[in-house]
Structures are given as structure tokens and as C-alpha cells.
Amino acid sequence: MSDLATLRTALPQDKQPALRVMPMPADLNPAGDVFGGWVMSMADIAGAIPAVRRARSRVTTVAVNSFTFKQPVSVGDLVSFYAEVTAVGRTSITVDVEVFAERDPENPVVVKVTEARLTYVALDDKGRKRPVPAE
Image 1 (tube, rainbow, N blue to C red):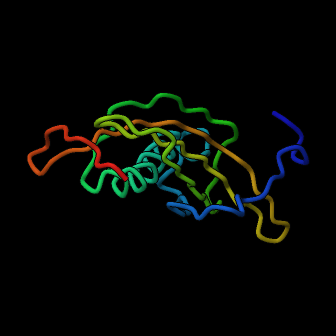
Image 2 (image 1 turned 90 degrees about the vertical axis):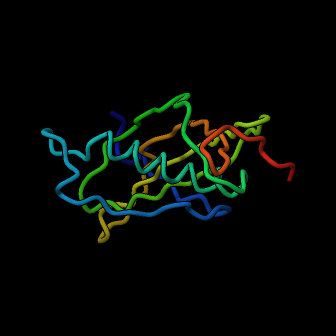
Image 3 (image 1 turned 180 degrees about the horizontal axis):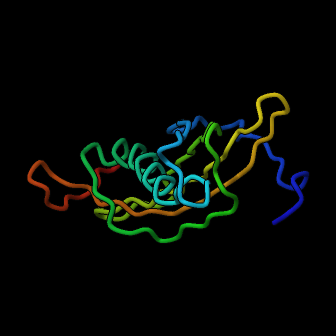
């Protein structure tokens, strides 16, 4: 792992997070870090928010195209999930999610902990694929 000084970053100033959450002790794995599945679940929720807005309907996750864990997440970190639509197909919407942890409130540090790309499909009221409307 890199020296902490090289990990310092800032939250994106030009975007609003889709989701912010603080993990709790129940979210830990046996090593004492936040369970990667918890981070994946929250990233999927965060990615679905702009996908639903773009589809103007419910969506379902059809692919996790990539998921990279860069740093562990700890209890007490304030975790921010930034999600942005990067591609729209006939029925699909691809969303990039960047995840940052704000830690140590006395000496604040912001660390990019995860990045992911997920693909969702727009669904009609019966759960069938439907075209994504034109913007």
C-alpha cells in the first residue's frame, strides 16, 4: 500500500454524491475491515439512482463490468458514492461509481477506496426489458 500522504485526495467538487453512509460494526469482515460485499451493495444502490432517473422506470443490475478495491473501508468512515451515467444503449444504462472515505475527523483525510462500472437494464411494470427513453 502507498504512503498515506500519497492517498490524500479531495471529494469531487463538481458533483454531488448519490449516496452517503457510515458503516457500522455489523458490517465488518473477520479481518476488521468493512466487508467488500457491503461496499458492493452500496455501490449498486448508488449506481441505480441515476439509472432510474435516466430510464424513468425501475431498473435491474445486469452486469458488474468492473470493481476495483483500492483501500479498505473502516467503521466510522463517512463513505460517499458518486455515480454518473456514462453510456446509454437501447435498453441498458452504464454507470460509473467512485467511492471515497472521509476518515479521522480530527485530522481529516479523504481517500478514494473503490471504483466500479455497472450496467442496468430498464424494466417495464411487468419486469420486462423496455427501451430507455430519449433524453
